[in-house]
Image 1 (cartoon, rainbow, N blue to C red):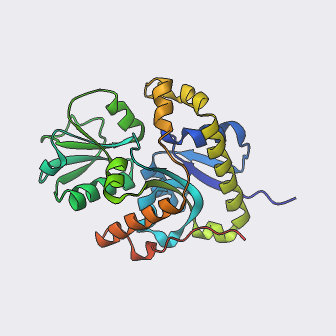
Image 2: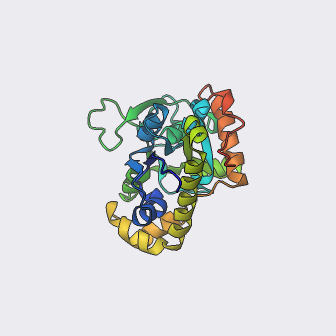
Image 3: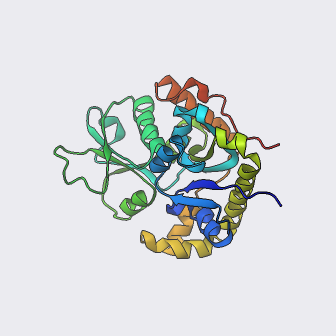
Length: 281
């Protein structure tokens, strides 16, 4: 009997990962696989420090520390067009944000990098940025012209119906590039892959199975997770239908382009390209 390898796995417990995480919790019974759930930025930090072996992290995390990681093929959080939970909420049009304060959620590296890229490269403006808790800006002493929010926080803010400019970052990227956008990746530490390739391959297979089953059970999953926001189960399902979990050829090209931008902007490492994927024997 094959030895059971312990693995420390980081998962994001936002609604957009529910079709994977919900199924995993109900169907995977592997005590040797220890789950930590947290926001992407926290998982980025834990994985980079060697406190996790495999995690769902910001795609930006791979770009800044590519030598540490291998990307698991076929898995992502991505969208082709609107994603519905990564927004820039602003008081003015994006071309009017030059020099003004834009607040960035501290929960994601990728979306923070993407909103800067969109504003600076696509709109040609250079706002001032501050990072923190976007649901509590009471201590901010100057007017905030824009707020970038992700995940469940973005869903909550989008329910308010307050007037203003709302830019879906996935939609804006697609409009400008014609490509999907990959917000998050399943990434393993290279050292763990080398020592335990069979375990990594098995975890990847389970994640792919969960993603497939989760898509088939979207109605039931939506009913269970919608009260978190809160939103109707129908609205939750329509939102989850926009989220994509694959990493096909178009997604790989989109990832390459994003990493090219990050490298040119001094935010990523040239070694991020070509992307190094986990390959099982």
